[in-house]
Image (cartoon, rainbow, N blue to C red; front, side, top):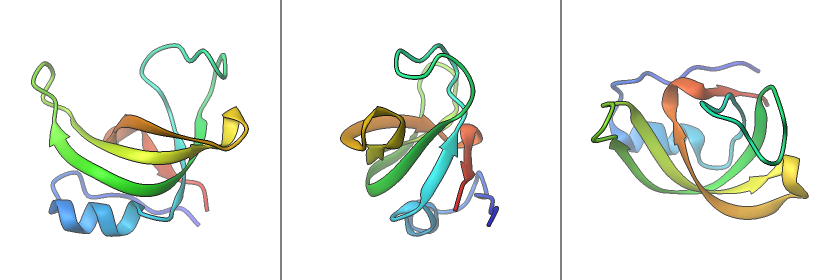
Length: 87
């Protein structure tokens, strides 16, 4: 399944679509876990949805299982433009 997230959607809609989803995420910078390509996260819960002060990009702060790092649960800040649904 491939789905999209409307960038300007209300926070409640974004949180509803992402909570419990397994996503593919293309990071902006280098990852210490995976040297290249998209990362895979299972989103457990959404803590907040905001716009960055510096660049104005919309992002989420979420508790995720990091599939690329042995499924360890970690908080991540992920920009919406980098998110695609994996499953």
